[in-house]
Image: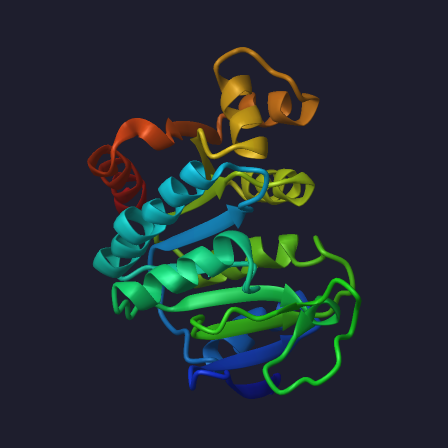
Length: 246
C-alpha cells in the first residue's frame, strides 16, 4: 500500500493524498485514492504571470465559464500541478465557484510543497497546496519540474481508453517541458493564444512565425493546436468539449 494522507485545510476543505516514489505504483495509488474507472481527462498546465490585470480577469473567467463547467458536464478528471498558485489556483477556485463535483487531482514534488499541517517550509520557494483540490499525488522530488513526467503519467492512467487533452495557458520554462511530455505521450496540447508567454510562443510557431526552437519542434509534432482566448466562451467550450468526446 502506498503512503496515504488525509489533509484538512484552514477553511475546512479536505483532500486525500498519496505519496508515490515509483511510477509503476501509480495505478495502485490512484485506486487507493478512490480514483477508479476511465474518464475523459483534462490536463491543465501553465502559469498566470507577467499579464495585465485585464488579461488576468479574462483568464480567470475562462476557468469559471469554460474549463470547470466542461469538466463537470463531461464528468472528467482534471489533473494539474496542485499548488496554490497560477492555473492550479484558478481551477481550484473555479471548481468551488460552480460547486463542481469533478475530481481535481494535483501532482507535486514533496520537496517543494507545504502540507496544511506543516509549520516549516521544506524549501525557500516551497508553495502550499491548493485547498479546493480533491486528491493529490505527492511524488519524490526536490525541484520544480520533477512532477512534469508524473503529471502526464497520472493523466494516462486515469483516462485509460477515454480521451484526454492538455490545456496550456501562459506559462514559463517548465511549461515547455509539460507540453513536450504531453506530446511525447501522444496527448494533444491546446495552447490558449492571447494568454501570454509560452502559450503565445506556441501559437506563433503554429502560425509559421516561430520565436523559440522548442515551440517550432512542438508545432511540427502534429499534437499541438491553438485557439484564441478571444474566440468567445461558446467556441472555446465547443472546441474543448469535442476534443474530450472523441
